[in-house]
Length: 89
Image (cartoon, rainbow, N blue to C red; front, side, top):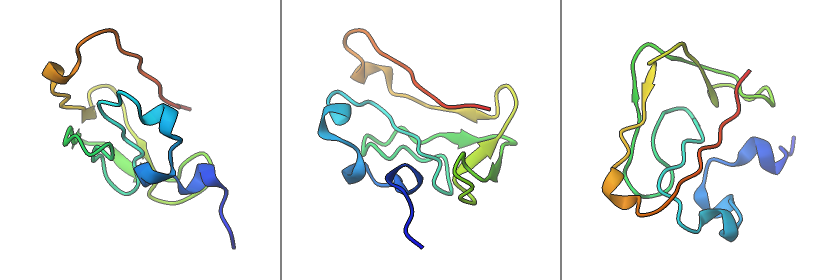
């Protein structure tokens, strides 16, 4: 079975180059809360549990409530404005 690109994006090389420009942290939740940007801003899981993502792929999403994942972003790498984007259900 071939998965769509959206269901497979666990590797930064699969993300379009224009979305990688200036990227500080990226959490695809592919079995963990690690920062896949290569910048080492790994998340710390505090009570969240792995679950299926929006495409039904197991261990590619998290079920969490407030304060379940700390994103540990090194703010010295942020020099201007920033945008946060996430999917939730």
